[in-house]
Length: 176
Length: 428
Image 1 (tube, rainbow over the protein chains, first blue to last red):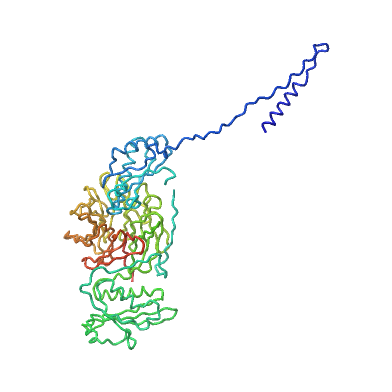
Image 2 (cartoon, each protein chain N blue to C red):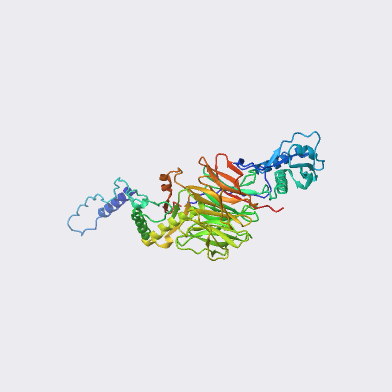
């Protein structure tokens, strides 16, 4: 289509230029019509290059935001110091994205009453939520709930597995 | 992302033939002292029904572990509830009791089961009944007869006509199942891809409250067993758990996330009129409420003292009193039907076990010896306790008599069973 338009434009210009203005009767001999200039119209040239879209920090393995789990000691709900940088990063993200709402799910290992463990998981997720709010998230951006011992990541009766299940997870929209 | 939930409506209190996918089997694993020897003579005419009434009666009494049944062979002449009893012959066989009866066809496809129970040493009748039934209700009629026999001979009310609720976990699904006390007629009230816990029977046996994780968080539902309809009665921000019915069936006590922990609340059975009940410090977990039979007291679990222990408080609100003082971990209180004792779970030397406390004397009897026993539930006659246990890593149910002697195991093939709740007496 562009070539056609260019050709028409060129033809029109050429036609304009070809139509001589009426010279004075005994004027100098008519200037020869200047040769039609080739039309030069800039055109975008697409360079084949890989699309560079920004990586979602929530999924970027290099970003602390991809770390979603906080682990706890047996029967405890205190946030251990090693998890604070991760939580601070999440708090900052929430602070910068006020429309984002997360779900925090607390978990426990399998030992003991299911309903008491529901409470323990709640205490853990609540501790994470309060920390995030302290670090800049707003209260309406996070709901803290508990899965108790009901959705374990592993089921072996070992210290290592129990430690893996004493955990709070942060879920972003689309993940819950 | 919301997971889809398949809801199978549970229809009717009448027995529907056709078991659920998984049948609950019950075996006796302990007991057998002082059993009452009883002879159960096949009822005249009972072959008219596919279910032999006298066989179901016998199975009920044997399963209670309080009876030993004598072998009764084919009778030379039909024996029914009007037959004369040869007491000398039965005494010669060491029978303490004899049950005889007959099945009689009636119009409209119904039957009458008539029976008579005799005390052999006293050579006297202990009474009998006529039970009218349809073929579909043959087992229910037999359970009714077994209740009668059990009561007359032990002095305790029979539980053979009651039902139990429990959760079955198999690959990728959780079923809230209800079965007769003998494990038959198991039916699914609910099927879900997400966990279900804490089933609780309304006092009139027509509704179940439970906690479902289908919304990716714990929510309390109340479901009608008659219509299959259900509603979320506690779905507040945070976790909602541990529903317990008041004895008049009008209210539920629940545990809701609050103040960094969990606090007890009261709600109407339809979810309205939320009221805070327990007062405890920030971060404390108050949960597992249980009403006393007179509705005046609520027993519950709290870690306000540091570790979880059992407390009681007035149901209308007020200060709590600690009930358990031995051990670091005492949870899951359930009051006996006569209000005089509580069963709970106690951590003893690394094992979570069933414990029974007499409230007046505060004496505690350990009733189980598993590693991870949980969720104790009283039979409505107060004589047996149903609870969840693990055998070789598999979830099973177990029952134990309150003196610790009689033991049963209840299991489902190729699945984990957990979270039992024994249903109430049905009106008779």
